[in-house]
Image: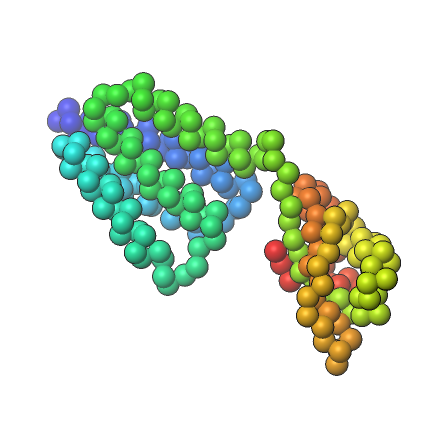
Length: 209
C-alpha cells in the first residue's frame, strides 16, 4: 500500500512541475490547446509506466526504449514544429528521470534536476541575453522598386506599410504577369510582438514566418 501512496505522491509532484513548464513557460507564447493536451497526456502515461517498474535498471532501460520508439515514429502522421518537438522531449524525459530519482529516494538530485530544467526553459523563452530575428514573407506589387538602386525607397515603403523597423530584406521570386514579387523582411522579434501589423493593407500581404 505504501508503494502506491509513494507513486501517487510522486505523480502529483511530477504533474506540478510539468504544469509549471507547460502553463507558465510554453503556453503564454504558443497558446496551442492541441499540444497542451499532448504534453500532459504523454507525461502522465509515461510517469505511471515508469513508476510501475520497480527495478531502477529496468526503468532506465525502458526509458531509453521509449526514446528509441519516439525517434522511429516521429509523429509521421503530422508535422510537429521544432519547438513543440523539444517540449515533447522534455515532458517525455522528465517523468523517466523523476520516477527513477524518486524511487531511489534521491530527493536532492530530483530537486536540482527539475529546477535546472525549469530555469533553463524559462530563461530561453524570455529571451534573456538573446536577440531573436523574425522573418515575414510578403507579396509586393510595386515591382518598380525592386531594382537595386531603388532599395532605399523599397525599404522605406515597406516600413511605412507594415509599421515595422525592418533590418534587412531578401528578394525572392518575381511574377511579371501580375507585377508582383515575393520579399522576405527581417526584424527583431520584439518589434513583431509589440507592433500592430496591418495585414493585407495597401497591396502587402503576409504569408507567415
